Image (cartoon, rainbow, N blue to C red; front, side, top):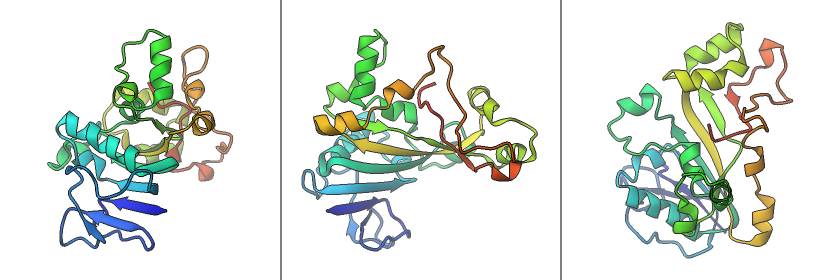
Length: 232
């Protein structure tokens, strides 16, 4: 089964199909990911890496959705897509003229049928893109990569990890990037396997920022965080 490294640039991965638009990149296939259809068959891909690439595609929202549709089409059931993107609330995103598409865990979750069904059941206002475009891409276990300044404050004990959700809501440049694993769901069996909506919020509407692997020992503070929620 094929594994795709989309927008690979110089980051060539052995035994993967490395894809880029630019001739000077080290790749196996040169293809513009905004040109459709992509040159892979339905259900032929077991894994996709799209690392700091998705934010450079789909300035036109219709093109962006078509990219998500193509990833869904070429992936087999239960395939995994690894998405790394800069936070659109960080200067790294704003400063780069090639960054044309803000990508967030919240936005990708609108292409999860599980989440969209929850929104429908609860009478929420989110547009059910997963139903409209017949895709089912389920983000989960999202990691927040903190800006160095905030990570240093955490390491020194000047702030608490439990405060980071609030700081991220209040200030820019707190989170520098998101690492977003996305499950591809195409069957009832996989639908049952990848159920994440029940973990999005605590009963009182708050969110849990604690993980059992964290300890008070400052030397054990990880550089990333995996919130229980992906919707704020």
